[in-house]
Length: 561
Image (cartoon, rainbow, N blue to C red; front, side, top):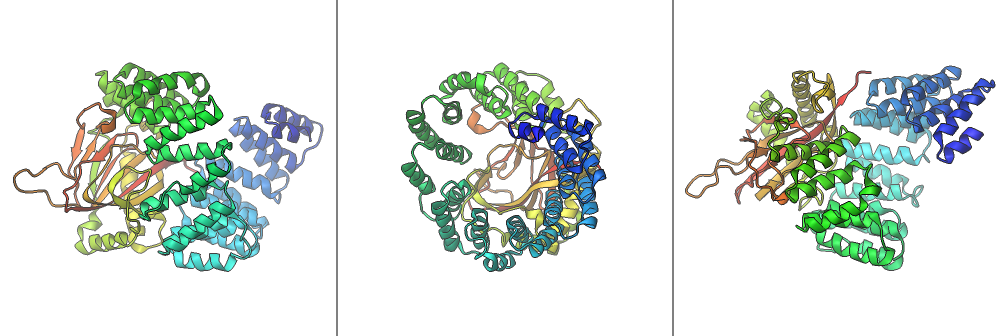
């Protein structure tokens, strides 16, 4: 009992001590070893936690919680095969456990296997029809697999049981949107925002829907209603401020920050949001003052140092940008923004480490997908993707301008065209990764692995001078652009012969640095361009009457099981 109390009180070291003492006194049950594992995990001792969970399973293989925790720990370290093995072994003993089916489904889903995950969520929902997690996640996987009509039918059948659950209401609204029922989806989100006002996902969904589907409504209308009713609830203001930042609505951020500060007084989070916004609208000096003020509070947060480095670059202070970016990469060695800003700082400092970090000749490859050289295959894939573009405008928080982006994870769709594309791309990425140097001192090369998993995949359709802002991919390790429809090169006097080209190594234009790209690539239909996720990349606008269709993705290395 002492260990449980100490863990709940947020003292994992004391909890570990209490559980170990209990074991030494002969209280040697599966439950106590499982509790020890959780406390060790809280304390950051992951290997010891793994051993404790194994001990718990050895004591009682039918003690479900230990297998679930062991599986989750392995999955969190990218060891999906090991996690799956633990959970399947437990299911041999307790085949009717919804908890085990849900846990295995979650591991399979994270590993990229939506089809198998869907099967286990379905089994769990059949064993326990009142299991909200199973019902919601089964519907979610059906949507990912491209079976949205089936997902909608399933959800409608379960609506009476879960009418009061916001997670259920949210996925039902999203599934209506998938099925082209925009007005009904909007009404559902509106109702959810009214009935469960603290469920911020509904408010964000309304904002996104208003912009991407061009409803003509105020995207912030539900937030305005919230602060009018509960003006002293900081969580509302914080969530709204965060949304304005991700949506790049910086004027709104500053306006909100002023109102929030007048109500809440000095607040480091308000200062942080305002500093980012001020930096983005070219008041970098005032932003720096705010960053300095909150540095003692946010010193351990990598995203703070990323923002600080960005502002230093904008202020033409490459030495400060270098120091801030180095701090970020120390705190989070896998963080892509820190390395991206460090590369820019080194370039401005004329430091050769820029090319050590981003070797544009070695790390960037354009590879044709041979099967797409057949015109019928290329056209088949184009048609498949065109049907997936449902929105009217680009997403609030993405790099594209004047275009649309598909919803969800493209490579999870259960369609023959997508499955073939995914498998072909996986083979190329594996080959690309296998040929990277073995270098444990390099942030990109040291993550080299034999296998990869996709953590994001989508299609982009640009039109009417559409383009991508220069950006990086914070969720990835290796990223890519696959070009499927490429406009013809412009002709005639005054034509822009760089239109539509992929540019790499060029800083975001909004930083005002004015540096040229390090590498420019002319897109080829049916060809894949691979590069590190931390490498700046964007596109030159296409011509006014042109259209361009592409696929992009991020992937991470997978540890062997």
